[in-house]
Image (cartoon, rainbow, N blue to C red; front, side, top):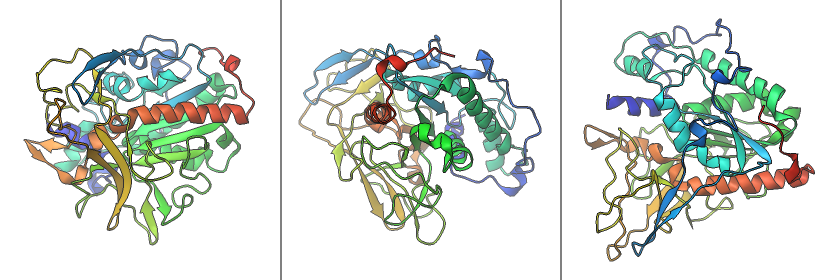
Length: 399
C-alpha cells in the first residue's frame, strides 16, 4: 500500500505502458447523470467534503500559537470547478462513481478552502485508479480508459454550465490527473470559444503546461495566457514544486515538456509578476500522507496541534526558477535554528524510507501556497466581476 500514493503522482504525468492502453479509446459507456446530486463529490450549500473544517493553527517563528477560524462566503460571487487527482482505491482500472473516503479526504484538503470566495462544484468521475497504475508499473496488462475519465469531466462541465452557472465567472482548479483533465477541457471546450469569457482563471497544479520559451501564450493553449497579475483574468496559474536545495534531477518528468523551443510554464502564486516571495502556506498538521514522512513537532516543546492544518508565516518562500531544461517552483524553507518553530517540513515522496528526488514536493504542490491560491481566486474573481458588471447581489441559487 505504500506504493499507491506514489502511483497517484504518476497518473498526472506518465503515459501508461503500451500493454496498459488497450482501452484508451473513445468511451462507449454513458456519462453519469450530473443532474443528480449523487454524481457530485461537492455541491454548494451541502454538508459534504468541500464543507470540511478548514480551521488552522497559526504558529509564528517565536512559537506562539493561535487558531485561525475559517468562514466560507455567505454569498459568493463566482464559482470554482474542481477536479481531484488520482486517489481512487477501487480495484478496477477505472474507478466507479461512488466517492470513497479517499476522494472525500483530498477534496477537503485541496478544494474546501476555496469556499472562502466561491461556490465549489466537484464531480465524481471514473478516473484511472491507483490499482490500475500499480498493475501497469508491475508490467501487467490492464485496460484503462482515459477517454472515459475525460468524458465524465466534460459531461459534468456541460451539466454545470446548463444548470448552475447562469453567466457566473468560474475558476477551474485541478491537481495532477485532475489538472490533466482540465487541460484537455480547456483545449477542446474553452480556448478560443465564447465560453472562455466566463473563465476567471485556471489553476492547473502539479502538471506540465507547455509554453514557448520567454512567452506567456502558445504551446498547449492557443489563446489562454499565463497569469502575471492578481487582476488578470482568463489566464492560467501552473507550476510543479521542488525544494530549492533539490532541483529536478535528470530523468524527472516534472518541469519539462517535449517540443523544440517549448518549456514548462511556471507561475508563482506568491508573486505572479516574478521574483521570490514569502508564501502563504496551509500545511497538513500531521504530514503529507502515506508516501511522505510523518511531520515532526511544530515547536520545540512538542505541543500537539489540535487542527488539521498549520499556517506557518514566514517559513516558506517560493520562486519560479530554471535549472537546465527544467522550469519549476523552488520552495525555500527559511530555517532559523535559534527559534522554537520547526525548520523541517515533509512533502518529499518517500518509498520504504527512501526519498525519490525526481518527484519533488508534488505531495504538497498546493499546501505550500494554498493561501496565495485562495487569495488569487478572490482577487481575480473581483476583477472579473468588475469587468462584467457583476455585483455582490448577483449570487444565485445552489442549483
